[in-house]
Length: 295
Image 1 (tube, helix red, strand yellow):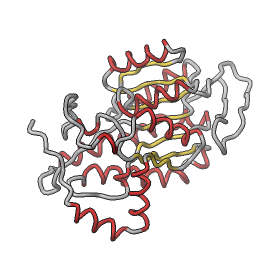
Image 2 (cartoon, one colour):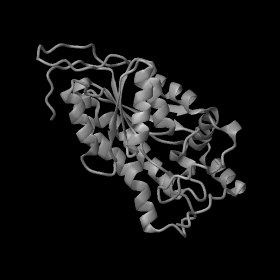
Image 3 (spheres, helix red, strand yellow):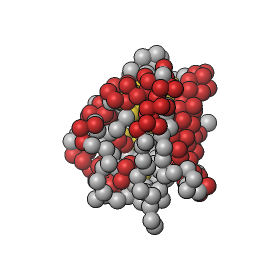
Image 4 (tube, one colour):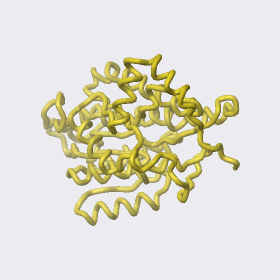
């Protein structure tokens, strides 16, 4: 258990207790959010939204140059931000950031496990390595982030946020690996409501539909193709900044799940209440997976 100078219990969302002062030497800043995968897309937009609301943000990702640019941008706008190079696939990277923050009195009261990517392709052609590569950040990276931040969240009576997907409710042709990982993440979130209750830590699952991000420009090996065309039409995608506003509102309200985009709500409604009809529609649609990587 990490030991801190004083405990300030988070009270910025429903159900959390009021702040208490245990009369110790160092004060913990309660409005600090740690976001993994913050270098682009949803993670980047969440960082901007938390900062806009007056939260100090700690940005973690592998691309430190992108993080430093974002941190500089947020500081220039009057916010407080720090950039940390780290990989959720590596034991100790998240813990190192959390330890560094707490030494500065910045124990995070919100941790967003956002880092991840998508592996696609026909299940007959995907290899065991493809499935392992998918589960490492999307499942084990989330668990690793939880284990390495939970002590700080207990101190701040904070909230652990899991970035899920509409794909956590239905699995379509060509999307088995990604959907499996998101089904697992949703199962984890459901269990955490009970597992973390005694520690005073909440859990929010974010279930977005199509949002502007780089995820559909990343191949099965995790390589980004920045110039690739997004296969989802623009009219169906929600801007990342709009999605981030919806997500942060739900997180701060202490909601157990935040479903983002209108079509996402429709899809999840049908998947929950009419699963056989939904499966029939998917088969009828004959959805095709995007081309598999050649490298």
